[in-house]
Length: 125
Image (cartoon, rainbow, N blue to C red):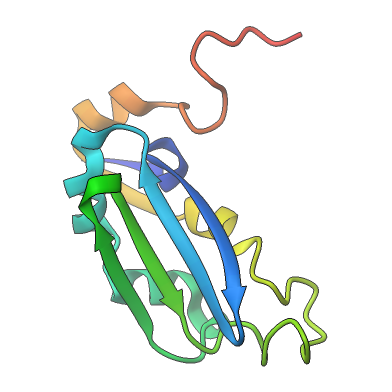
């Protein structure tokens, strides 16, 4: 087993609905969807965010999109219209979740190494 960041397996988007942050996580490759389901339990996501998420975490599976959607209740200090938080619309929750370290088989770690940071074939410039 090897530790990698979630960003190597998936990409994500996030936003808000009142006091709830909404985070969608999509596997880069359909074959990794089952691994995402195994790794990203509501409990594990809640632990990752710690006291930032005051309420429960709900997970919804979207197998046709190879995606998971999480609702992080009580994460936005009341929401965009009343909160003084810097990110009252929850836009950075996706980036924060992608930094989660996960343990995967060595062959998966080797296959996805660095994928979330530099697109394959991109040389810079």
